[in-house]
Length: 320
Ligand SMILES: Cc1cc2nc3c(=O)[nH]c(=O)nc-3n(C[C@H](O)[C@H](O)[C@H](O)COP(=O)(O)O)c2cc1C
Image 1 (cartoon, rainbow, N blue to C red):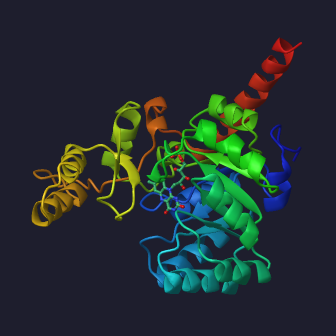
Image 2 (spheres, protein in one colour; image 1 turned 90 degrees about the vertical axis):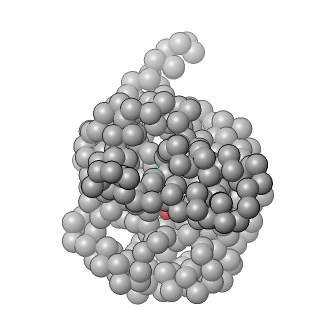
């Protein structure tokens, strides 16, 4: 197979064809999605957040059966015990790549993974966090802007990526708000050598997201997300349901604990009040406004690569 038109150092580092990572996604990043992305030449990443150790073992085994290409596991540091058990499972089951997200997993965890020969990439929301992770020994940084779905900081992708790229001497990938080839090229223009995409893959045929969530994704606009603490206690960008918006308004107004707890339960309720419909709330990024259809993963990746390459040629011609 010829090298990707988008080949970068990230492809060599991770053993993948295209420098396109599918960000780990609790609630939608199932084995179907992860294996489809890896089989299409990107990097599929399994989530661990919210899942048991047994599930992680079963998921790793199943992805390993469905693809002979590299895939990764994401560890959200949810306390030392959680981080270490997940890291040990990755080592034991020969997972080649681990990503970390939301917070610093700690130097010990990074060393444990690196000593086992695992490539480690860290998702970061600030320059300071990026520098710390590089000091701890990670191989690459994924700079994630606050327009992303999932846990977010406060700096958006446009200013974050070049500042991180200037501050560290390892490859930098961009995440947050990338929904088509224009976003990919923008990321490269900012100094990234690869991209991590979440929301767009949530709206793929292989996504494990419930039908309600997929329907929301293809119809919502760029203003239909909300950053809320109702899901994990930390800021998470989600689909702005009336229940989540009500929770956030009450929180801002200083509502008391009982009121907030009640609103939080309603916002996280997984079923439609009248119909028997799974309405489990999902994280989603502002780029959802750009997504209007559900497509197979292979088509999404092929289009991202072909359109980015064509656009790069146009830019070169414009530049003379
Ligand atoms: C539904 C959903 C769940 C997510 N869960 C996780 C997770 O478990 N761990 C993690 O590091 N990032 C998680 N993220 C963030 C993604 O991995 C990715 O970095 C982000 O979606 C990129 O921004 P985008 O949504 O604008 O493409 C999640 C994102 C979404 C949309």
